[in-house]
Length: 202
Image 1 (cartoon, rainbow, N blue to C red):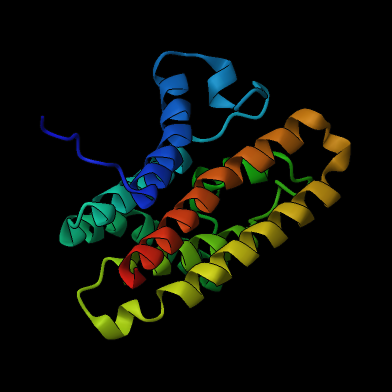
Image 2 (spheres, one colour; image 1 turned 180 degrees about the vertical axis):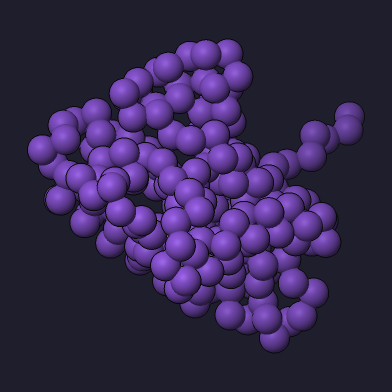
């Protein structure tokens, strides 16, 4: 009797990370307000935000099954967006890119009248992207840094989540729930990366 192929922990976590942004995209596609805002219809998450997370999770899935080049190709889209956001921050111009990628953060800000770049969120995503690129690299020297960079991404995510909840506590339980849920794909992807390292060691 032929055995079914086993799904590794790294692959399972990467698939889990893709489900949440996929649900948000489904909310936009089928006009389901609860899905668009993860339970908070008044604070919808921009579809481009969800799409970027979905691509990163998909890259994690491809890396888990050995398709490293395809994973790196998927990561180029969120990388270009982050570079454009940093360029906007350095130049002082408001192109609206931050409002596309971090709509949920911008919606809760009282300073929407002026250009804002949520550098905490940018730093978290930059660390996650770096970890995913290193994981999918063919260079053993590059992959040696995966664990350290992933650890930075986890720490930055937890710090940003704590700060967001503490400073936006008055926004209510729904916003806190959305903020916590938005961190789930990042933490799952980081878990997938760390699990893949353990598989290599064993």
